[in-house]
Image (cartoon, rainbow, N blue to C red; front, side, top):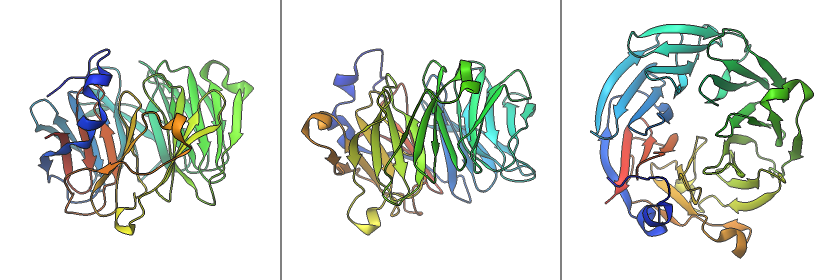
Length: 330
């Protein structure tokens, strides 16, 4: 498999290569829909959570499943690898709204993070020791993995969707209902947002917010009608609108889409099990709206694709419905 090194983006992540993706491996290990995906920092492992309350870890180099864990008591969602080898965090779906920090070696919890009073709907690791999370009621917490209590919090009033830059210094937070997007300096959370804007969401709600690689100078905002808006992270002004597929069967579902490591393509799953891609190269100069560039050759035959994640170091994308699919260049 081609590896994405320090600066070969133009050669490897070309539009032609991305258009030729197809399914090379498919796993049918779950009995319910997969709800989250995350790669570790090396791209050699991917973790999934499912509505069947299982967590699966796959070796992306060997193309095999390595580990299965269960969280029957608390449920699981939004699992992510931490920067510490052999540990993960995941949100709870029942009993309470705590975030759980787990050792994969011992299958035991290291620590619980208590502070949210409604379901955690967005979460990301920000640096070696920090984590940011947002809940359904609009509360955002910043956590130090070494401490059980929140080290800072803000409130965006409703449906807090969060992400952070690669240095862990800036938090992007959206009010999913109103469309307001704000930026916060993690060192001065108590001072409030240093930049904020009201995004025109055309009567929709924001379903997801991502800081786009590689430099974090754009944000990707996903609306619940399957469209996306690319926002300049400095001016907080929209620069591109990615239109949802016209075919009703190709409508992206409410899910977490993914961005290629060079920031030049957006990939999302569709309701019919297919994968749509938007090519962003040169589009800011050509116009404000972008149609789907292609639909990949392949199909999840077991329902809508809920989640997508692009490997940060390899020419690979992973998508999840009830099954998990590895996509590479055919």
